[in-house]
Amino acid sequence: MKKLLLLALGVFGCVSAFGQDHEFPRLQVRNLRSLGMGGAAVAVPAEDNILFYNPALLRSLRYNRINLLDVTLRINNSVIDQYNFYRHHQDEIDAIESLSNEQLTNLYATALAEAQKLGLITVNGPVSAHVLTPRAGAGVFTEGTVSYEIFEGAAGLPVVDARVRGDVQVMAALAHTISAGRRGPAGDWHLGMTGKYLRRYLARKTKTLSGFSGNEDLHFYRAGNFGIDAGAFYVLNRRWQFGAAVYDLLSTTFDWNIARATADNPVPPDKINPSMRLGTAFRPGVRLGKWLYNIVFAFDIDQPFDQNLTFLKKIHFGSAANITPTLSVRGGFSQGYPTFSLGLWFYLIRLDYAFYGEEMGVYAGETVNWNHAVRFQLGF
Image (cartoon, rainbow, N blue to C red; front, side, top):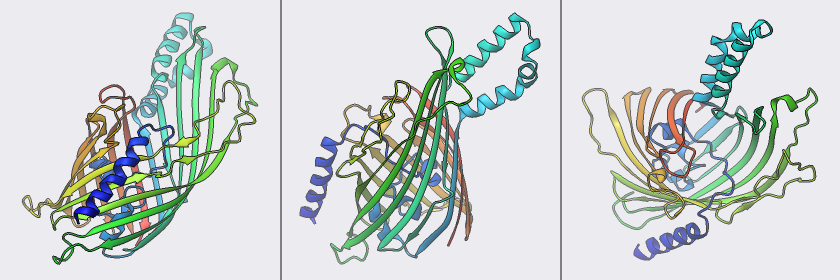
């Protein structure tokens, strides 16, 4: 057991040593249960946490799971604020030609201040499905993300920076148990590996608003490649579990079709560097009154060896509990920001809502991005 533990820590440590910088984000379909728990997932036995968090968690499944439909919509507060601004000023915008110079100047100033907030819209699905068993799993996942920001350029004209990203990823995972003791599940090591193929589409446009035309051309870059994730899951006892995972173990590089790259459509990064996550989960086995049961606490540290990130930005922790057999509640902190989610499960249908903060800068407290997310799943 000690040799196995040292070997696992050595592998994870070596990978993290050369994989500290994210050149490009990996596709991570984050489930709303994890988001509500502050993003902690790598050691939490749950089917939603497996293919993207830790393939070794396959061994924690008690039954097979088939997801036929999986749709998630995430929108940040900036998009909501901008929509509300448009709704509250719709009369002025519709009658913009009749506004005085002073009214037009005021409307422009307030609109520019609102538009300078970074807007993010992400959709996972509807072409997302997976099959999970206690030993193997496979799935296909899609994600589309649109981000935009309007800021004042050097000449005083509004400049739009818009980005579009589309991902299609096929994944297959295997897991194996290495029994280390005679106490049943306690003391068991579970190891897992995921092979994946990612096809990515990118587009970016940065121009002044007055420079856009009706036949504006948007260049899409296309590339794809294979990647490997590896994970480990250790059951200390029926209360404590520990998990670790390395993503894009050998780096995932992209060969973009860059023949049409221009000044306002720069060539994107060409690599997803390895990244790592460590975590633990604890189940106290108690009830709080008649309402809270199946309580679990979880703690993850993301990129533990990355010296470019502050400690608080790496931390994700939270808790989940059932209120009824069909209703669960979760709460936590992600990178120093509070998170919350609710889940409803009607056997074939699962509905989730999450509200969470996400740090966009290097250190916690630099640039927070508040998000709302809803998810619909159909499966059995």
